[in-house]
Figure 1 (tube, helix red, strand yellow):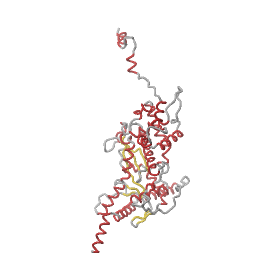
Figure 2: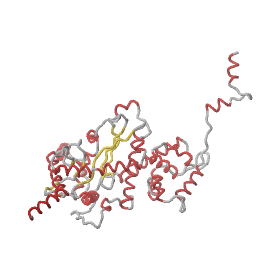
Figure 3: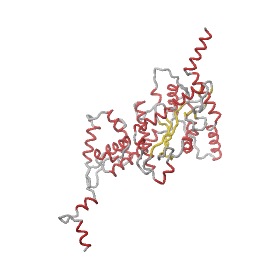
Figure 4: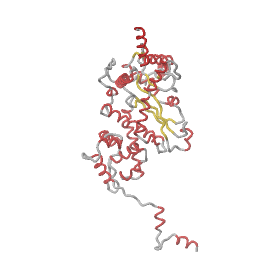
Length: 439
């Protein structure tokens, strides 16, 4: 009897099992891709669209010309982005919808499914758009927007910092920033949990005064400090190989009467005493040391400003990345860095593919030109047929030159003297002495 009554209790008056159907299976939503495409054109892409170029950049973090270049590049690089017909013969998602939903997800730090009503796509399709966009975008633009600076780039960077900071030989500032990982796996909590007791992934970067990132390396566990990240970073290989070949047009340079053969980076106190690093004085005592510490800490704010603008512009880096897979996090972060560099190039040079740091220099001020040729990048030596022992000895020599603490101290002392000679306090004291002599 129980076998008959129990099923009958689940049936309605008409004998239909409607309640079970409603609770076990949701109604399939039919998305209108044609309506989404029409709304995108009316609002953003037509000649007489509703929103102008400034509002377009505020919404998607890129200008409309840059968006068109991105769309064309992605359509040629992947078969996912061109619009296609589905198996039922209906029109699919347009390329603009796939890119815009990804840009808005990165800009506002929320899941792409939050914009499903505007772009008419399911949760799986929205997540697929973000994954494909970050992966294909990184492979397409990384070689240019995160390139190793060429000889012409280095000369332009040095000229920029000479104009802005009144110093020779500086190529940027180095630091590490932590990106929060909200959906870190439980098994990785101990590895990625830092001193703030939250799971983070480290981003190491070098930026110039215009906030262009010349180096960006991501994926290090949050439990590592800046020194540990440096030991795993490809920046060491760049400093021992690439810069030695490319900086020949920029050296030697002189600071306070001392000649130097290596360009340098500004770093904080945790970094080692290498010949390419300039640190502040830990406990300044004399007026010269205090003036230098204030100068070094203020100039090193370039990298802090770059991180701040990057996280403010792309809230996904501030709010926390919501994915379990570290490779996808890497694609999202590097994509945000490349988009940031696009905006910097457009702001400074007016073209995303023609960034020159010296374009931001005020031409009304006299800036001496560096001697040398603005020629092409020097080719790297061919090492395939080189004897391993010869190669290792050459590398060891370059490594010892990089880790030379004597050269580090000599550079720091020259900068201390240079900053003091150009400081207001020194000029006032010198004027007072002259006035005392006259009186």
